Amino acid sequence: MVTLVTGGNGFVASNVVRALSEIGHQVISLDVSDPDQFVTNYLSPWKDEITFHKASVLDVDALDKVAGEHQIDKIVHAVAYTPGSRGPVEKDRSRSIVEVNIMGTLNMLDLARRFAVKRFLFVSSGAVYEGLDSDKPLHEETSVHPKAFYRISKYACERIAERYRDLHDLDSVSVRLGGPYGPMERVTDYRANMSLLHDWTGKAVRGESIDVVPQNPGDYTYVMDIAKGLATVLDAQVLPHRLYNLARGVATPTSQLVDAFRKACPDAKFTEPIPADLSSSTVPHVDVSRIKNDFGFEASTDPYTGLTEYFKWRDESGYVG
Image (cartoon, rainbow, N blue to C red; front, side, top):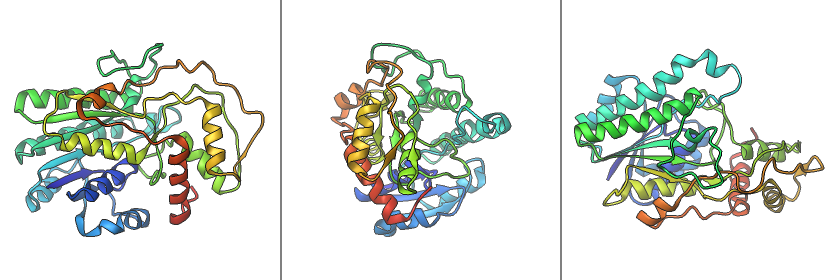
């Protein structure tokens, strides 16, 4: 089985490359940059199963060349420009965000159509639920109205992939990820919006004090759970639905997250007192029953276990960002 993973040097995608290699896929990892030392070290045990290609998803000729060199069976499209919704990047790079996220996806869908790819998985984001207020978990059919360009682009690409499926009989599916954290998250040219736990673990390894900002309980999902969930959907014999949430599906209060963090890293220093959550634990989190019911998959890694693995990777890789 030959699977092309776009954005393969990135945070989530590098873990997808690893997860697929572990279960026997021959992986073509495509990225606009050459793999850095973190990528090559992280994936070194599976180097015989991975081929790296440097190409942009905006360069159709380069994409055709890669597809012409390999008999691609499946595609995981994980390329995304992730600027965050605050700060100047979204304003200054609006066109680039839309081009990479939407036109890049369109190019990959058309590649899948032209080269008769058996399945196309679009990596979407739970960020499309932006601004929703509910006392019930957010399910895949919840109406969404994203405002930031990144979130708009993810939702738009879900709909484009669905339309390609209808028009061209392309077996496509979209998966919305919730709260990923863990190994290989680092600042890159296309990822400026880092997770809360990237910030906390970075401060901990640098010996800095961690200031906890008042916030809502969060759904924190260990990245290898996400990678394995994506692999499960990718390899499923039948796709009963076109859209899935993939997250732990648990709203973790800040106090519990701090407790797990201190257990995983006893030397961590938090600025006291730890503020209370902005709201109760009934803050919206995603409903993950569909992926469980259809495929029997659960993202079950608890914060303590995930953080322990995260710190282990930081220690072994020397990453202190």
